[in-house]
Length: 168
Image (cartoon, rainbow, N blue to C red; front, top):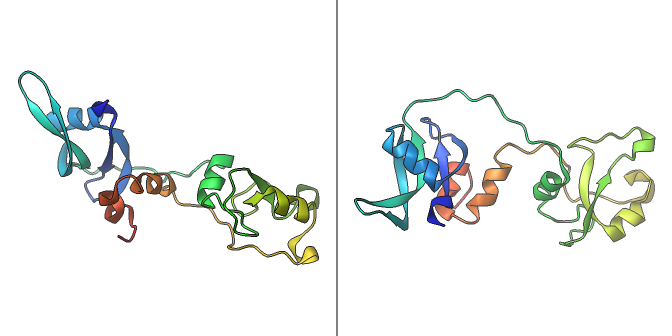
């Protein structure tokens, strides 16, 4: 359904806020709360009006938003690590999560201690420290920015890339 299309909502400062449905974007437009930055090629028609669905919209008034943090979930860790084993680099559908410092050695569930790992690497590492078995990480894990979720949408809509601080 066209009204469920995704639309990037920017603050008045052009800072990306979130993704809304086309229905919400049209409602915001007709209540004069946003301006359309870029339209999609899709059109919604009614008996009296024809309206081009926006792709990127910007609020007319700046709103202060508390800094959001991504929750530490399996899905978000896999997304941060691009569904790639952080030990061997394979892209596998059956990835597990691995504690770099095992829990019984003082490791905790945190962005800096959890990585995506294939089953083979997870079994090889086992309950040991990396230095003890000479395994290395491809990249050090860190807390991703809130924009990680928005970056996923940029793959579907390349016109969003400049607003999400991604290279074209």
